[in-house]
Length: 496
Ligand code: NAP
Image (cartoon, rainbow, N blue to C red; front, top):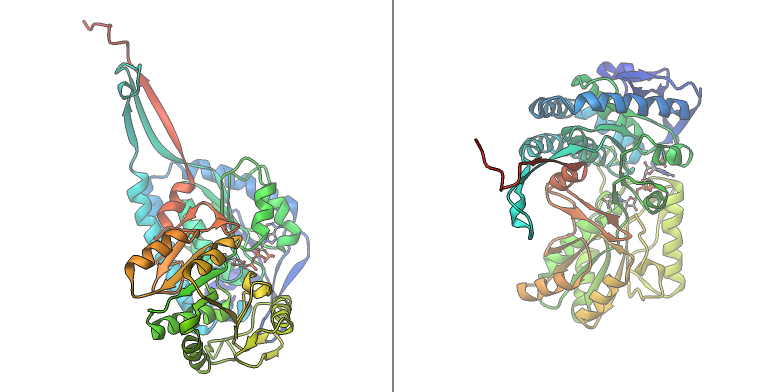
């Protein structure tokens, strides 16, 4: 049960505590925030609504702790991270249970998220040891007009306090993908977990607590983003913001001051299927890519662009697979589970109604019970239909029929979102030319879009993000370069 046993201290009565100065605390606000179970729509958990004064204290402690942490030898920082990774994996059950209850993640996927997170932390520790131990040595006479009298030593140093804000869909994995690179690089971290997903996040933080990180180095502030978000992101104590989520990120990037930003935002990942594609492979990837975790993934296939000549057969194959998807409760590990909230379900329904009114072809009957929406493929979607462009973040997938490859590439590049895309073809030359032409952060050839493996570079262009993630890039992003220049006497100087 979430919040029991080893995790007893993170909760009092029925409200989970927040984490500051190495301790679990109740907020002086006396207020809590409800977390609804997406499947039952009943209150599942409660977390503290932290105050601005509490946030101020957290930033003060984070600043002080960071100064000391930056002096801890790199191998010791790595050792602490390995310990946290092992604890996370050891305690995967209560964390996964929280993921099932507060974000309706299918049971097996919930466990996978925690295990993957442990692996990510360990890999980050190892990668950090490798890349942070390297620096650069430059000699001045390679630049025109200079003599050989200046020696430059550069190395990477931490940024300071990193504010980490992950979204509801991977509240553990996308938290550790910020926390681990920040800590190995010598930063401190203030985590603001998503409200749906906060309890899984608090359990994850407790694993870091048990691993024995110094007080104040890692903190976790809970509360609604709409209430404390601006105070956090505009706080003068923040030296870097690493954010994953939707349009909120665009607003944050306009408000944040002179701090480095890492933004992982929405996607409308297109899947282009050519005439010569292996249609069984394409159909399997479209269904896995489009409907895993009910389509609530940034890298979900969000629009299929199929060449007219193979579209009928492709749609038939996709529909046959959709018919086999199980729909129901996350505890039963169903493929399709309730979407995260009633407002999300209503938004998805709005997109479905728009497609209906504008005459698209429904391959299945639209069915919804509460927040549970049955998987739906909508064919013959035209550019005037909202689903052609918008991210439903649910189990609804549009198919646009195209008569030329250029039409598909044009549709992909005309969207403000530019996270990933994929192309199915047996012709590798065509695949590479299409990949070059698709203006997205990544293009997958003959597979659905995916973030992992977590050490691959991962980035969104345009409204899909700022910067590049993936373990190595995140470590680098959370550092700055510091140089020391040794100035020798001029070459005319003679010794002795
Ligand atoms: P969201 O509504 O933007 O929320 C993301 C986070 O921002 C949550 O922790 C939220 O807290 C917080 N927040 C809300 N208002 C804030 C404010 N004013 N200031 C600071 N933080 C604030 O996104 P979501 O619904 O959780 O996630 C779905 C979106 O994330 C989709 O668009 C998806 O494509 C995107 N996503 C992108 C990636 C990627 O790597 N590119 C990965 C996963 C998801 P509360 O929960 O308390 O509101």
